[in-house]
Image 1: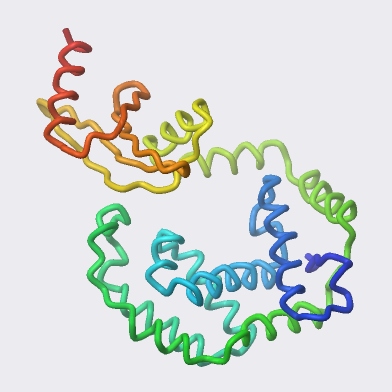
Image 2: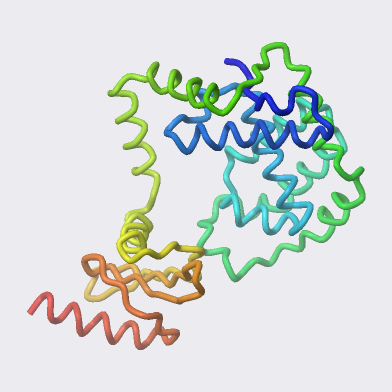
Length: 263
């Protein structure tokens, strides 16, 4: 598979424009139901590497941990990108980061939110001491020098994505969609559905609780939307109520509702 870049960066003034062109094509492809394995593996690694560099440079490793939900796949792609560019100093810091989070690697991300005890200052400071824009410049040059690089206009990029999708069988596309859905907890799918129906967009989960009522487990999830509102999802047939910070109040509400349902 070729690396696909905008024809506007064939002779770039800034190497970071090349990195942006790679990221823009990949994002466009992913938004159109193409998956990582359909695309050039080096381009994918540099896509995730740029995502990592942008987060850590501005907000540190803690932000990277939470924004990626501690994804093993993304961590592997970042390391692959650093190896491609032979950035050993960056790689050493990333490996130090992995050692820091090793004790919590197997924990549920929702158990960690709001209760992070790890100090990331050592890797944050080490990363700040590295040469600024080194990843951007090396990645841009790597992409330009790649033996199978295609410079394409917007319509040509759309045609490339269309051809990729045409090569995927209907059965494979259905299988992919089912795999994605199976990896999303049912309550997250419910929240996304509710938000879509109410023209809202979920920004973050603030707390998740599993409450037991006569051995009947019920999920209660507090979440925030991008417009700054707080909501609570309650596992009662897609019900959302305005957030009540007092969990005991939620318990009383749930008990009453379950009594109605079972009565």
